[in-house]
Length: 250
Image (tube, rainbow, N blue to C red):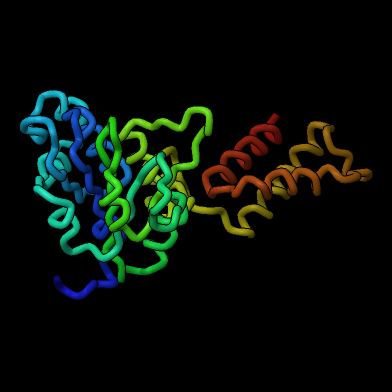
């Protein structure tokens, strides 16, 4: 195995391993869950469905993530699946008497993100009906248990994968929302532009009798406080000054 490259992001390092999956549709759904969060490394250990990468149900459930599905590797053992990995996390709703330390998805995502590339982690999810066998769980570094309603903690395979992929993505990119291409975003107005707008607006308010220049009280400070919370853009300042100009013309 090549030495770890600290410049490789978690999106390239994290591997999803599915063990003895029965339904091809679930494999497609996991591929979709992975792609929506930016992950692509998928390994199938001895799947119980025939031709899972080309099965019609798998392709339909992948819903556009067919590149992740078609790129999945099929192997015969967990050892093969974990080649190149140095940290394995079993995912199970069932706690075992003899198991590695039990972690939440958030604890796992925090560790593999903060490690800055030294870890090559794998998330291992078992069969839909019986889950992971004890011998695989006992080989792992940690057991991930998703906190859920204790009265009904059953998660579909792809739902569990989605929770894990989401937590890892949030740990990697943070809470900032990418708003590129959403709505109009102009240049922020300068302080001089905003002060000019306030003077123009005050003149218009006096002209229509809304503001008494001899007894202004706190109207203008309150208006300034209101606009200061908006993050005014140059175009917005120009619109407000245009309104003030029309008021003064009349």
